[in-house]
Amino acid sequence: MPRLPLTPPRQTGGALRSALMLLMGVALMLAGLAAWWVTRPLPLRGGVAVEFSVEQGSTPRDVARGWVEAGVEDSDWLLFQWFRVSGQARQIRAGSYELPPGSSARDLLRMMVRGDERLATVRLIEGWTFAQWRAELARADGLKPTTSGLSAEEIMVLLERPGVAAEGRFFPDTYAYAKGSTDLAVMRRALHAMEHRLEEAWQQRQANVPLASMEQALILASIVEKETGQADDRALVAGVFANRLRIGMRLQTDPTVIYGLGERFDGNLRKIDLQTDTPYNTYTRAGLPPTPIAMPGKASLLAAVRPADTRALYFVARGDGSSVFSNTLDEHNRAVNRYQRQLRSSTP
Image (cartoon, rainbow, N blue to C red; front, side):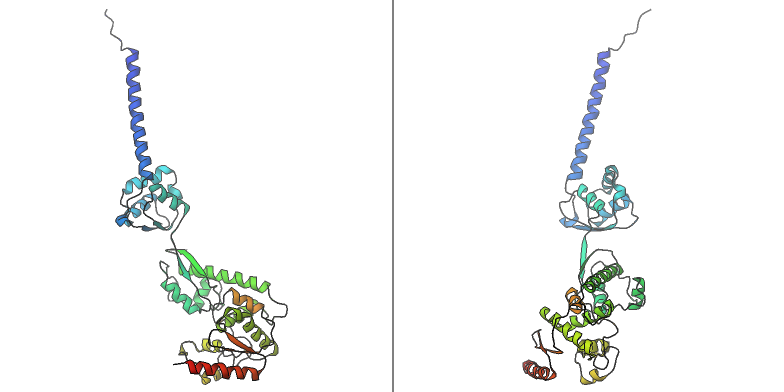
């Protein structure tokens, strides 16, 4: 019987090789396209930086879609596939990010995996009160006002310092934060910073400093901060108050009286104000006031615990930010007459 013709093995192998080469070519082309897409600059709406916040619990698909909605003019499906095939999709961190022009999909993923967030800053100024600090936090860009409507006492409870006065407890500095952070989180950092700085200063205190505790050091530092218009005068101002505390002389410092007046102070401190007793009136009461009156900086903290070795008991402002220091009341009165007269004559 006739035999069926067999397909030559050479022809079968050639066709298979051709198919494999075709597939390899297609694969290389796709790989090249993928490499090009991943590394080329992503098109951004308007050609400007795009901001987007990755919320906690967002899926990689949510993240890809969110970037496109925010202004990345590309396929959210392609972005998601890139996140997935990279093997890093589950490593994307929550946070607020800014994608600048010229960034690629690879740059975008790297930024989110590293957690390179776009940070804003808020500044706490030396000598500010807690009320001023809260007002600045309320104005801060992208900071969630979670403490709005709460009293100072309620805030300190949330910060795990119940019964502690809020005044003076936050270290003046510039604090960076990611958009979407809470004001309470920034407060907590400033609180811990002040506690650390106060502890550092207290460890450097002079043996004869007339302060019984870190609390007293913080209170005196806040007074020094408010009484000093020139950095070089801090230790001398602290020296005057230290001398008064040693001999039981009243501090008689206007900033404490003003703080005690609160909203009643209209910018003009009158004789009746100095005579009206409040817990913060250091003309009517001996010793330190019950709490700090402002946020002292590092220099004032150190001045309070390391005051200048001076015999001065008095000082008066020159009007240029500096002060004149006197050992006796007669010297002080002459300085007051001289410089207060100059101030009155220079006032329009």
